[in-house]
Amino acid sequence: MRQERTVQSSVFDLFAGHEIGCELKAMSQWLDEHRELLSLVTRDLRRHDLKETGREGLPAEAVLRCALLKQHRQLSYQELAFHLEDSASFRAFARLPWGWSPKKSVLHKTISAIQAPTWEEINKVLLASARREKLEGGKVVRVDSTVTAALVHEPSDSSLLWDAVRVMVRLLQHADALGSAIPWHDHCRAAKKRSRSIEYTRGRPKRVKHYRELLRITRTTLGYLQQAAEQLTLAASPAIELWQAQVRHYRPLIERIITQTERRVLAGALNGAGEKLVSLFEPHADIIVKGSRDVDYGHKINLTTGRSGLILDLVIEAGNPADSERLLLMLERHIAFYGEPPRQAAADGGYASRANLRQAKAWGVRDMAFHKKSALRIEDMVSSRWVYRKLRNFRAGIEASISCLKRAYGLARCTWRGLNHFKAYVWSSVVAYNLALFTRLRST
Image 1: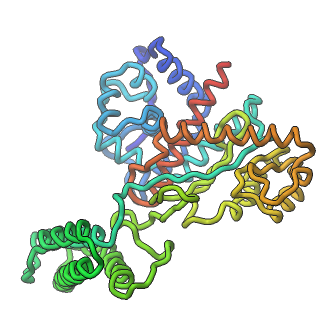
Image 2 (image 1 turned 180 degrees about the horizontal axis):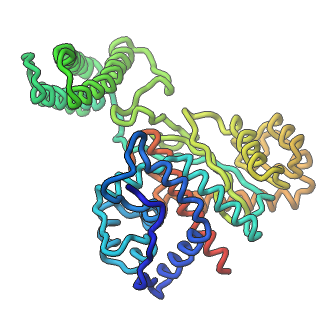
Image 3 (image 1 turned 120 degrees about the vertical axis):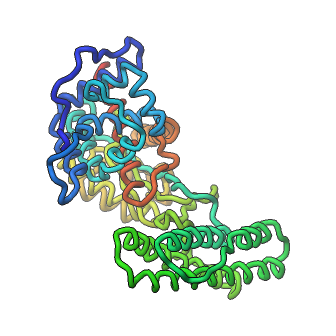
């Protein structure tokens, strides 16, 4: 049984006079003004076919506040559990029931249950508050993109094959515990040795030899796993069903790794960036190359911010679409939320195209400035050169917002696993950033 909010607050919930304590108090006051958000969180926390009886769990209010606290202070679950027990200000903000000190496993299970659409709805309520209090009206906006890395190591064909062998050996050991009786050999050491040899060997012929051996080991281990899966199909138990689900998840990914390695190393063909699998554990990760800079493995993100610095909108892209293809989508989403187009908009040069400028003007954007003109005349974009300089300088401010999100709110690298959790992590970082900035703007 889980309540939406902590019914009885403690009289000892006091915030410290330090600036962090004052900021947490202001954030807490805004959350108290919008208790309708708790129903959104409760919806995510209540699983299907779960009875409303039994032991009490963390109230939805405490879960939401702990999630914001974690992202705002960039704490691990273990650090969050410690500070909730140690800090009076953190306990006051989290609204924990009296005497409760949740462990890291409970915090992880409940916080990760909040879905990305819920965080997006919370952000919309926050932006509506900013609009009512005339802190952000969405009249002047800027658009830019960045990359959030997934929780993966630098990928290579040899390391992916080594990961595949490790995972399959682990599944085979689990199968033995479940009653499998097939004979098999642990090739982990051999796979690791070949992977390291490939990494430090010079010359393509020598590397190809090691790749052939590593591919043979991977295929042999995959054969063991298929035999174990066929044998355990005859038995039925919850543990075996869970094991079979893991096999069904990993088998096509391992076959894909083998295929792409054979195609690149043995056949000499190139794999397109959209076709490559860069991680066995985060298969959703994309290969993102921005200009001539380093390669990132994660997801490209398009952001819209306003004059206040608040993040007005965010889209987590699939693949690596060109910026010029996403400008109209961002403007369309902005118009759908605010009910009217922005009066002025600025974007990086990658978003520039004559078609984008023409459509933005048709939708009612009076001044549409691109940082790089890209063969567009200033007179076609804005009303005067003075306006163009102002909007170009205004656009540069979004770099500071992105930098703050990456440095202080964890947007540089997602530490949660899975695509759905990736989206929830990104949105929770944005909500924590917006809420902190909103309270600062409100106080001034």
